[in-house]
Image 1 (cartoon, rainbow, N blue to C red):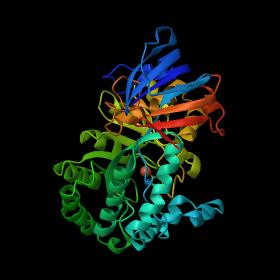
Image 2: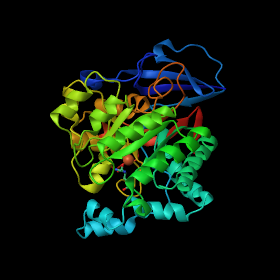
Image 3: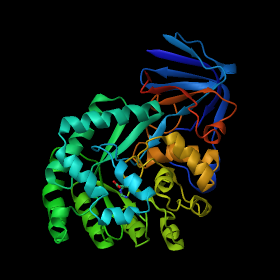
Length: 412
Ligand code: NIG
Ligand code: FE
């Protein structure tokens, strides 16, 4: 099936094949074609260019995009979309003065979600998670990474990963699964952290690898969660089972997690709200993508990742939502892009690069996702009529998306 889209006001983020990420000063450049056409063959981008050079094609379907812009669909490389219930009470407790840390120390936080998850059936978790996935697709997300980490028991973790696998089977978008058994020490192992890590490494990892349930391994490397030493031990074990690390670091404290991630060639290091000069130095000339999660900073009122310093140091940066019940109950990448511009002083060009090509890199998808490139997946956002792509972050509360296309199919 051939779809021809004509009269596109501006086709945004066009890249040659082989460009996998953009770094430093190059992040300020967002290549576009004005007054463009785009041809889709089945689920792939076949061709594009200026309307002046529109080729003759026998299209099965023609879409007139007069006044509208087209971008690649968002690539959300860090989420915890699969969870049970909500943490609305903790939200109100924080409004009334408790901190995220105080709530966690009282047995709330991740352990609260773990209890809900273990009490829910696989079917219930699937039904709740699919609603969230459908919502983020409507908001323009065309590829997503989803973590486990609210089970913290063998059965709970496997249940979460099976739900992720089921979602990947039933929906057209690319879904990458990450094993985050090291999200918190479960209550039952409060006084036996070694015992839990032993189960994670010797029971959970073999099961996951046997059933091919995850591609990445994650650890929450943070004071009060997992130490740098434990993080290294778990990354190393994950690697033995063929899982590449992608880890939570520097959310509240800089304790050496960035350097540990680099040492184990992590695909990404995520959060980075608290970054020292040596953390930034360490990331230079590595293959590890730094990932910022500004809607988490917004929701918890914690610092934003210092994007300006990182980009000035020549680093790449990706943006993701962190969609989860505790620190970021939102999967809206449009809000993430706007917040990165408004609060992190990223330019619209930098933020769009961070949310597309660099996001694709941070989940190992930059050969197929994240840009308008012949041969890549036909994953597109068609905007409503807008003046320029600046309007996307500028009008931060408006829904400026007209149509989302994932793998060549229009999402209702
Ligand atoms: O990325 N920081 C660790 N994990 C999640 C939040 C977990 C929760 O509060 O449920 C995050 O912010
Ligand atoms: Fe997270």
